[in-house]
Image 1 (cartoon, rainbow, N blue to C red):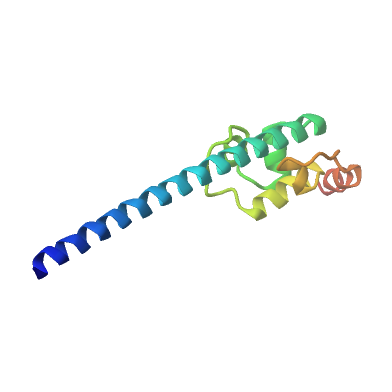
Image 2: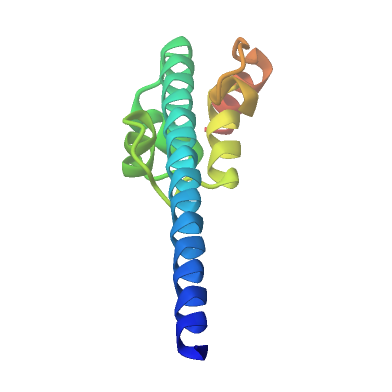
Length: 121
């Protein structure tokens, strides 16, 4: 009889484990979708700021010290571990916009920041 009871517990445990795995899978899928939306918002923000600042990828890379490949990956909304908060700060400073403008907030480029960058070159 003990054997049957333990078998019942195992079945209940396995059902709980499967349910937890389904919940975890749904949560991670939702998170990856959210990250994809964030990457696309960042790509739009960077492209828009580059266009309004009239900067090419090469000019932005030279101005910020960020590798051209990383800027290209951001523009294409590709996942990259190289896109850190520090990279976003340097991009925003180089483009003369606040970080919020790069990730979806609406803002015009800061002319003073653009002037500072052009004077430092």
